[in-house]
Amino acid sequence: MKARANFIFIYVPLLCIMTGTLMAEETVTWEECVRQAKLNNPDLVSAWEKLSQAKATKEITRSNVMPQISSDGGLTKTKSAPGSSSFTSTSSSSGRITTNYTYELTAQQLVFDGFKTSYDLSSDERDIRASRYYYDVTSSNVRLNLRTAYANLLGAQESLKVTEDIEARRKQNYELVKLRYEGGREHRGSLLTAEADVAQASYEVTEARRNIYLAQRQLTKEIGRRQFVPMIAQGDFEVKEPDTEKPEFEKLAEDTPLLRQLIEQKESARFGVNSAKAEFFPQIYTNASVGNTKNRWFPDKNQWSMGASFTLPIFEGGSRLANLDKSKALYSQYQADERSGRDGVILTLADTWTQLQDAMDLVGVQQKFLEATRERSKIAESEYSIGLLSFDNWIIIEDDFVNAKKNLLSAQVNALRAEANWIQAKGGTLDYDQR
Image (cartoon, rainbow, N blue to C red; front, side, top):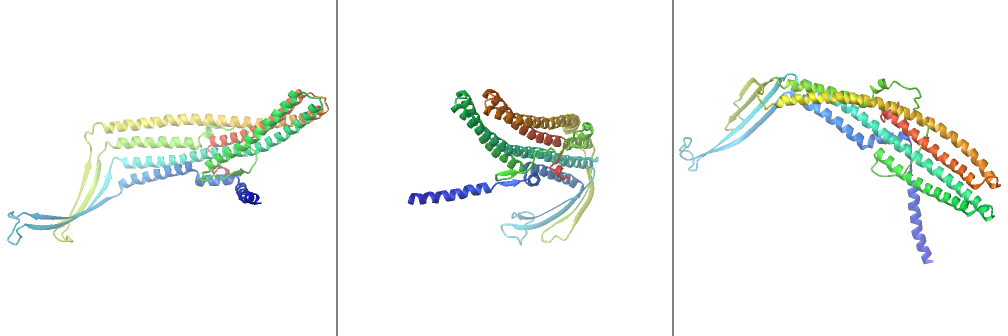
């Protein structure tokens, strides 16, 4: 009784833990995954911070045209040595200590710099736009990865159902072959083949369960969750963006975030060239200051000055010329990047559209194969059970039926992936499904 009590004491908490784990599975929709990815995906967070940096850079540049005001003050104590000209009869034998207070307030305003700051501001504005498009590019990539992970989980879940059905069918077939073997109407090779088919089906069930876990991990990563929770994806394998009519890929490419980002980077570099040229002009400033020095606080005798100044480097080892050459080279680089990017986007659009059409057509073909093999399997099973069909011919038909089930599922998952690639090629972001 005591041993039994201990067993119950251990088993009941263990059962509660297992039940809790099963109940912890969360059913998620595609819309919920998108919502969470917008908030938590680290790649999106990084892209947003990059945009914030670009905005801050522009404000730093803008500060150059604002008045530059500074202040300073101080206190100094001076001790005169005995016998010096400042030593008097009222001084101590060790010398006299003098205290001075100082303050100064200065202001400087940029008047002209060859429009360098203006060009820098325009360049910074293009960098901000490029960062916005970079955020859209990142969002588009995140959507692709998220949709692929979601399709993988849907496929893994359906694969478990398919493999379990196949396992049940293989076991049923094994029992039929076993009965015929025991009745002397089938040889041992057929029995062992049927037994191996059962083992293969059982392995594929176990493999499908592992794939579900892996797909859940992948989806957790793309959503951006810090803690893993088993999830069940809710949805079907319907392709919602068939786009059966061939679009104008050149026109479609112009609106993609990747190409727009490259264009803005090129424009930023163009203003950078103008900014480098402006360094050959003098910089003119107006400045003013007010301050005083006295031996008591607060100094009440103000001194002030106003004026203008300019700076123009005469020789700096050729750094300005080198900087101009560098800016021109950067502009040429971004021109080439834009051209290459445009050609690449157009090709990607054509490629992903073609793959989507092929994937959708293949789903239709595999559905027909499944219907045909299902019907053949019914007929073959009945013929084999009454001895009108040999085991070798029957098992080929059974294998065709099993493979047709797997091939249809694979085609359906590939169609979802192809759709995700097509949407990403068009520049569809996480907001794409909210249109």
